[in-house]
Length: 255
Image 1 (spheres, rainbow, N blue to C red):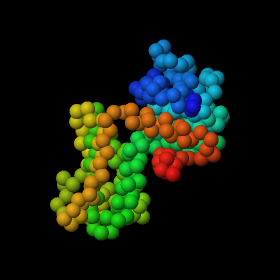
Image 2: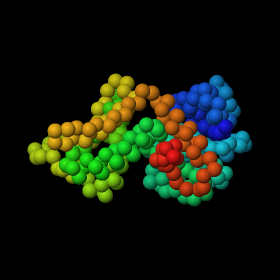
Image 3: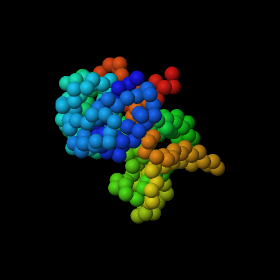
Image 4: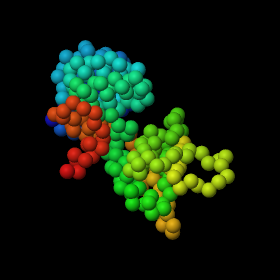
């Protein structure tokens, strides 16, 4: 059993992960951390990790960037493996997290979904074969009307995976409305759709002469991010200090 401290336990994802752990006996949340104390949670809740005296195997964080500075210090001090799922970190916070990873295993990813991270691997393999054969590459992402950023972090991660596989030969194009010229063969188009309650959809399109290959991922609920975070926590237990990614989790699962 993997014993977990849930940082941000009173938030939406904290409660989702709590429900997942209640259904899976291989995980147990032994304590929660949140300034908003929720008496309905089935474990003790502390305002900070510093106050928590309950031992655990790993920490999972779904909180806010403003709640991370003190957390990083305590993670470093305790040397507890940590899965950081909060987005929007500043450059200084990212640098600090790199420093923390010298003391304890840390995992951070743009998207915690196992399926999305398999997709990140697949697009690399596809790009290495199809791009040299003249296929154009486009990414279309769809999210709910309340999502404020565009394109999504996952869409950018997909583009980055392709670009990495192709030795960073490509530029990204987000808007063609003011252009009157043919498509540049060394560009990756990234388009965003916002509407309704779409949890998340990502399509990677490889368009060639007389054939099209599409790789697609649909998120039907946010529970997929919680499941991925729990698998990441299980993966980190017993690992050497260092900075890990969900690709490391995927590769270990494939072995």
